[in-house]
Amino acid sequence: YVNPAFERMMGYHKGELLGKELAELPKSDKNRADLLDTINTCIKKGKFSLSSDLHCIPAAEGSGAGAEWQGVYYARRKSGDSIQQHVKITPVIGQGG
Image 1 (cartoon, rainbow, N blue to C red):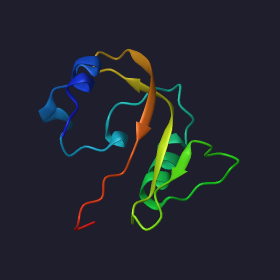
Image 2: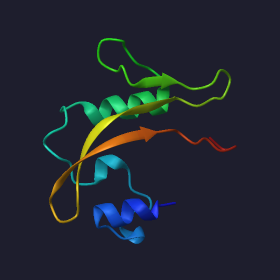
Image 3: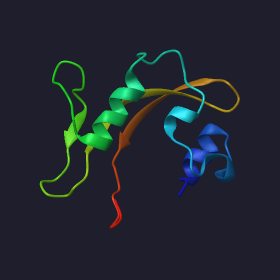
Image 4: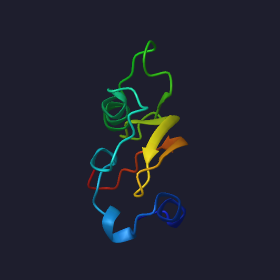
């Protein structure tokens, strides 16, 4: 699934985004160098440390999911412009994991 608002805002078409991870899209140099690793660790494993990942919120007990991450992320539009986004990323885990 690709959110149509994301397509409009970022200038990408659905076919360019399906199957891609955030790390595969052009990044802005305004983010911390380890931000994507921090987000991935949070949403996949639910691991966080209070010193660096204040926006990692553990998933519901027994859900089998990692954790939700929310915070500011600087993305790069297809045009090359950098844009500040307030992001909430929630893992969606199906029956097969």
